[in-house]
Amino acid sequence: MPEKILIIDDEKNIQVSLASVLEDEGYLVYLASSGEEGIEKFKNLKPDAVFLDIWLPGIDGLETMVQLLEMDPLQIIIMMSGHGNITTAVKAVRDGAYDFLEKPLSLDKVIFVLSRGLSYRNLVEENQRLKKILKQEIVDNGKPEQKEEKTGSFIYDIKDEKNTQKQKTIKESLIFYGIGLHSGEKTGMSIKPLGPGKGIRFENISEEGYIPARVEYLDTTNYATSIKKDGLIANTIEHFMATLHAFGITNLSIKISKEVPIDDGSAVKFCKIIRKSGIVDQDEIIPGIKISKTHTIGIEGENEKYIKVEPYDGFAVNYTLIYPEPLGKMNFEFIMNSPEDFEREIAPARTYGFVDDFHKLADMGLAEGGRMNNFILIDNGKILNTELRFPEELARHKILDIIGDFYLLGRPIKGKITAQKTGHFDNARMVNLIKENY
Image 1 (cartoon, one colour):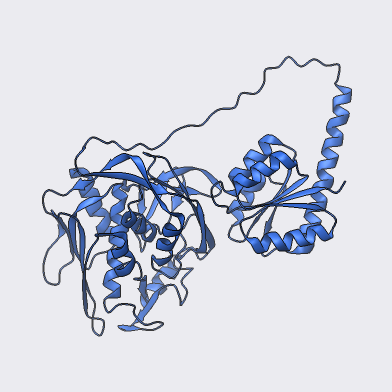
Image 2 (cartoon, rainbow, N blue to C red; image 1 turned 90 degrees about the horizontal axis):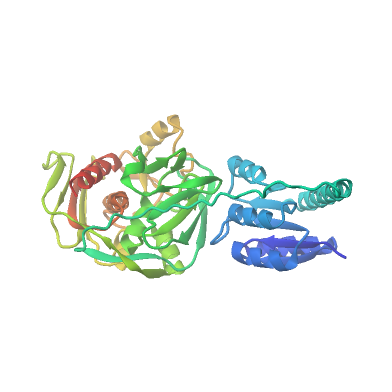
């Protein structure tokens, strides 16, 4: 009988083109668009080989592979990705994949790798059959292997029943592809729901563990916000964290390849992703932080650098940016009454940078993913590559960063933030101050 091949990939064009080639070679081909669907079809079909994409909605490719190999340790699994890296490939092969193919696929290589994999499996099965015949009289009294069950979750310490709101997660898992602004690498991001009390956590597509999106794990604030734990790192998280803050998402798994994709330098695409996935209210509550007195870092003055937080019945940010002319002084105040306000007034504001800064960033090995369409480039006070979306777009982007950085407190805030000439480092100082006092 023809050998059965299962393709697990959420990209329809990959499914169609790959299936067409394999069917021309005489294979029976079956399709699945998610890890969950692939696992169910695997159980019923018992295929001879599997083509499996790394980035899948819900259960990602590496997790799917582990479950498939538990059901059939000899299964030939050929991993695929157009947004992976060498670390991901090594991780996949180390965990049991037969081979790793990079998209766009070379169809000749697809046939070669598959043919070689099926021959390898036939050889192993024949060797096992011969060993079974030779050892059929040997009685094995050993104990079965016990598998350790891993558990654990991040639980909020909920003591204050005042100033609370419902915890929230998303309805459906989704994937987003792009480029890392500072790494310059093709990357992806998958998001999936988490239960109440789990918090927002960043994971790596090729490594185990997770990093709670909390100020306790803050790693660096050089030109972007990064968190780190036990060797895992998540870079440039602030724009997506701002979106989660605006939509009130409190429990979410975010899987990346070290850096969140930059898209066009704004948070517009992130808002669309959350809208598309849907939002689910959960039964448990999360306490907010209500600012009860004024806290200031820096010197409050007309041209001074400072950040201040003060009591306010809601959440508001007022930011003043001061540069030499012709940019000059920009000010904007944002009151976050709804996600729609954020989508309309703040999310479209893009990352910006100066030509001189990009030379410094290059020396630091950063901004490798900077393109003319994913940030605003400024030289001698002039915008070089685009038109501003708002007269005060640069100040609005600073507010976007603040909204994201302040969500490292892990819960909503009632208070007003006023800042002038500040950046990620100053945000982190204030976030730590609030954590210590509340």
